[in-house]
Length: 117
View 1 (cartoon, rainbow, N blue to C red):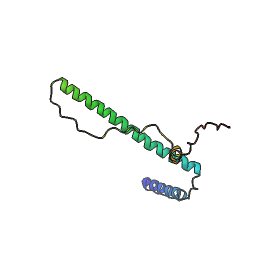
View 2 (tube, rainbow, N blue to C red):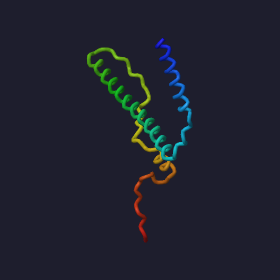
View 3 (cartoon, rainbow, N blue to C red):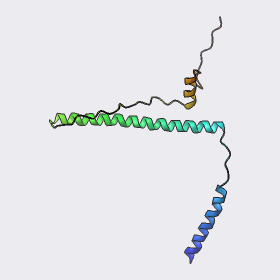
View 4 (cartoon, rainbow, N blue to C red):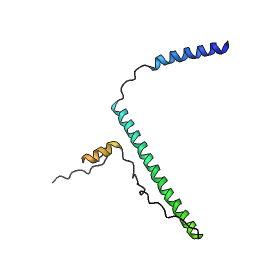
């Protein structure tokens, strides 16, 4: 009996909580959208950097394995040629990337003052 009452109470609480969760949130501001875009870009770059580090480590381990096999006089298959490890380079914020492709200086970039004749 107490189990049934507990389940009814939990179901009623969940129904009340769900009605409040259906409220509409305000639209994000430009600053929030920019921060979300930067976070998304940073996560994508982080994934590429991790894949690059993994690729380099796998190449290093495979090279060491082949050298050990040959050093012990054991037969070793030729390594399968795969794509080279792609270095993602340093992280560039989306605003700086857009500005650099448009030819304008990046946000926060220091410009040298123009010399007057």
